[in-house]
Length: 254
Image (cartoon, rainbow, N blue to C red; front, side, top):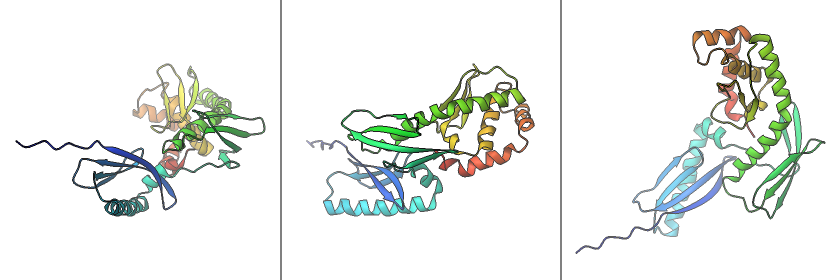
């Protein structure tokens, strides 16, 4: 009677690699398999290897993986934009639109991160020194986004109100700034205008285009010819702004 072979439990190693100046989160899985596979997902690059390889064999596969990542980053600007976020240091200057913020970063024995904007334009960040994994940068970006959004919200709300009064004269609800990657803006059935904080890094006329786009949805909740006529009447050169976002949008963000 043949005995079943026990399958070893998969193991996961998480790290980051500097690939041509781009910091790429990496997840290495050792699992029950016979081959080596590399792939790139939304959150990280993945390397899957069989269990039980000799250390020299693992090192050979890892070196191959690094070379493979270099090729992917070099030939794909999309990958470079997706993972190419800056690493913030104490004393750095963060430029958002026409505003500049000085970062004051301290690491503490705490479970979560916190931060606030001081009257002199300094963003004081208290970060957990326990959180240094691949998700750290993402959490820091969201924290900075929330702080900067609070500073910009009154100005953006005034621009929404002004463009609405000039071109649409519709009832609108709340204006919100969110660190959203799935779209540049949205308009709810209740008239709430949601805008991505990544837009704050764009030129003013591009921000105005996205606002106009969402305000037009207060009249036409679709992308029909009538909708685009509303957008064109308010901003005749709106296609130039769309093109700018397609070319440069991947580089916008914290």
